Amino acid sequence: MNRCTKCGRLFIFEGEEQKHTCPPRWEVWESTGERASSATRVFAADAEMAAEKWAEIQDDAGDYDIVSGRLSPVVCVSQEGSEEITRFRIEGESVPQYHAREI
Image 1 (cartoon, rainbow, N blue to C red):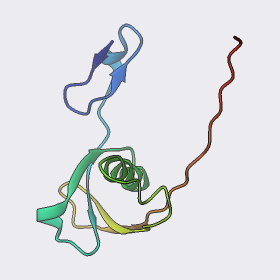
Image 2 (image 1 turned 90 degrees about the vertical axis):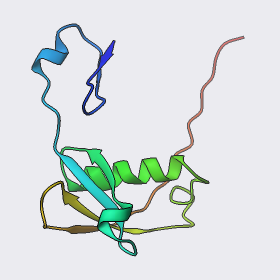
Image 3 (image 1 turned 180 degrees about the vertical axis):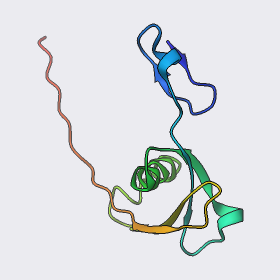
């Protein structure tokens, strides 16, 4: 399995990388911060997916405050090179998952 060196997409099937086009790159930052200094850059198909990727990165790096419901930040999202900004309130949920295996 290979990954795209630009966007990081994982290629599972042989030859998949020849048909691949990276999605647009987005800048995402908390509405309380400055765009230039605090923006996280992610590849995503649209602004909403970029906001969700930001949340995954932020929550994974800490105490899962978004998933636990302790935080519901507002983020600003802009496609790289664009001045158009879309705002999103980020919420998460923890979904229990159970497995059984025969012993």
